[in-house]
Structures are given as C-alpha cells and as structure tokens.
Image (cartoon, rainbow, N blue to C red; front, top):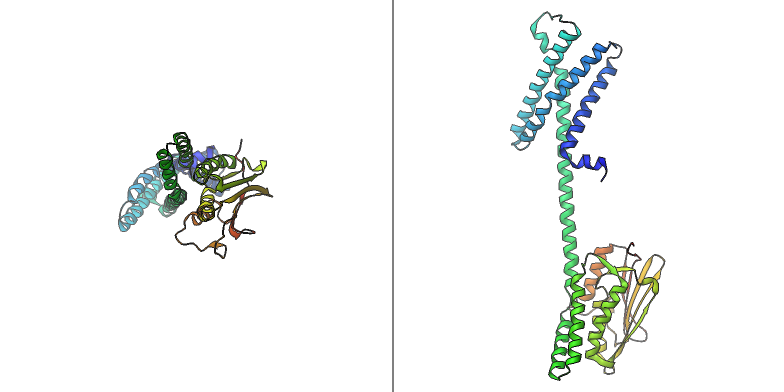
Length: 357
C-alpha cells in the first residue's frame, strides 16, 4: 500500500494533512497578494502568525462539527453559524493585535473597537474552512455508502453463484446409493467399496472447491472421470465415453463442476433411454483467446427451441448459463444443438485463462 493510499484511508492523517496544507496555502496567497505592500521579514512573520492562529483556532471546530452533524438540521445550522462567527471574531482580534502590537510596534488604534474590525474577512475564511470540512465529510460518507452497497452487491452475487453450484440434481446421488445398496445385497462387496470410495472423492471435490473460484480443466476432468466411473457401475458396457482434450487446455481455468450437470443430463435423457446404451463425447480445445468445451451424446435427441431445451423442471442447464453469466457477464457463449446423426450437443465458449505460476 502506497503512502498516499495510507493517507486517504486514515481520517486522522487526512485531516491534519489537509488542515495544515490549507493554512499554509492561505499564508502563501496572502503574502503574494500583499507583495507590493511590504516585503520585509516582519511582514512575513505577521502573516505566519496569523496563519498559525487560524490553524490553532479552527482545530476545535472539527470536534464541534463532529457533534453538530449528529444533531437535528436546525440545531446543526445554528451551531455552525455561531461557531463560525465566534472563531472569526476571535481570529480577528488576534490578527489585529499582531498588526498593532508587533507590526506597528505598539501603536494603538484610536478606538478599542478597532481590534474587532475586518471581522467579515475572517468570517469568509472560517466559512470556507467549514464548507471544505463538511464537503469532505459528505464526500467520505457517500463513498462509504457506495462501498457498502458494492460490498453487499458482491456478497449477494457470490451467494447467488454458490447457490447455483450447489443446486445440483440429487438424482445422481439417489441412484448411486441405490446401486451401492444393490451391490451390498448381491454381496459384491469389493465393487461396492470401490464405488463408495469414488463417491466420497467426488463429493469431497464438489464441496471443497469454492464456486466463486475457477479450477484447471485437468482437475475438473479428474472429477468427471470419478463421476463417470460411478455411473459405469450402473450402466456397465451401455456407457461409452470418448475424450478429446487438447494438451493446451489442461491448465485452462474453468468454473468448478461446470460440465458435470451436462454429462448427468446426457446420461439421464440419452444413455438411460437406449437399450444398447450410448456414447458421450467430451472435447476441449482453444480457439484464439477462447476455450471451447463440447459435450455430445448419440441419444434419441430432444426438442430444442431457440437454443434451449423444452423440458420441464430442469435446472441443471439453466443454472450453468446463469453461472456463466455471473462469472463472465457477456463474454461467453452457451448453446444447445441437435447432434448429427442423433442426440444433443452442448457447446460452451469462455475466455481462455491460465492460472499464474
């Protein structure tokens, strides 16, 4: 964090910096404005004394205004006006004393009230100081409100993404547990144990990875292989999977568990409907600055309207599109097409990103 960032993030340091800079600026401007009047060191000394007096007298205003800002509007306005006038009057007396007693070497004005003359000039200066103080405070308050609103929006956005990721169809889990139960009844304990182990690894992966973060595609592929090995116990030779993953895609970052609902959808609506089983093809390649993911099956197909499936009560594919929109905004593509000669093909295009070393 730079020195300037630390300065603006601390209200205490910011006040003293601006307070001192403001009065130093007053002294410089006052000297330049009166340069033709007198250039002797005694006049410079008077200007510095007046600026220092203003610096001291306006410090209590900070604490008084801090209290006034918590009061009702009318009371706050009255307090500010009274405080401005009181400090301006006191500063005027100090400036006149400096002028008559030091600059004029003790020469007295004709009347005592001359010590209170030129109050209007002091009042303008104190009023400007007060205006700057309230302006900065109001600006800081607005910025804080914007930050709080942005933080709340970000938290809601992240919660939405997590909800979408964890809203997985329990159909897979129920079928897997039923398959394990069947294997136990058939006393195929080794197969049941292996299936439990794979299910445990798959669930651990799905829960351990933060839905907000992205994972390398190679890691995602390992989890998908676990999932497909579990499903292969149920379908045996009826489930054929083909992989075509380019080497350049292994470290490409993708949203965790982004392909699993697509493959689950293909197994549920394609493979399970075919007596002889079917085939699922999974591919990944790069094209320019994009990563292209493709999942296709050779099942009986589906009714696709305007790039969307017309099935009812399906949330898996809808959630994928919403997650992609939340993570990439408009910089992505998600399409559902008819596969040739039969089946459904789902295509995803996202920016090609690689985790920094």
